[in-house]
Image (cartoon, rainbow, N blue to C red; front, top):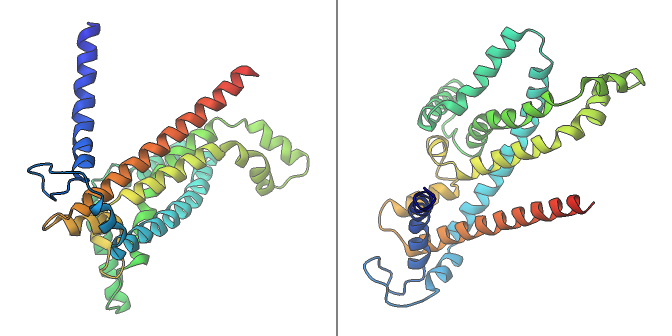
Length: 267
């Protein structure tokens, strides 16, 4: 059984990582072809770093991801607070279910519905060019909110109610008691929601495709536009850099986590 389990795990890792390995390998292919590997070159990486449109799309993605994740985190945190303090369990359950709908919906449904909403608003306001950064920001905040709520709500459930009550007995207002006592205890959940929202926004293609404009193009849209015709090998270089960056971040996070655990064990 041990041999079979090891073989099974090996097959899973092979299927997961062999396409990534092929991508990285051919990003250094001198021939610029997938038919054969003729030699090692960094020309495709040089071409990528000279591509101003790629870097503009990357900056757009980062601006959009940071803005939408921050807004969704603020709204989602106070939304989770409201849900936590809601007394009617039936209304609370209904609201909880409704907040999960955008997360469970297929992306294409959310994208089409958001597009129809913005088209309707453009018709009401008689605006010719309504799509752009604003519409993408609203759409990204919308689908980020359920993930923030999902990250923050368990932290509220773990809070000791007596701490907030004690703070108010000592003279704190409810708002001050929240920011001084409750907020520091839910920060890990807030950070998790923020990072999850940032990742989802940076990765999104389908919803962005329906609410974007030619004036504001994110990195996933840029990659799609480049690969919809003849694939440039600079796109392989771009994807390889993204994979290696994520790998380095994961290694750093795991190393930092292991170091903290080691210090805690020593203490």
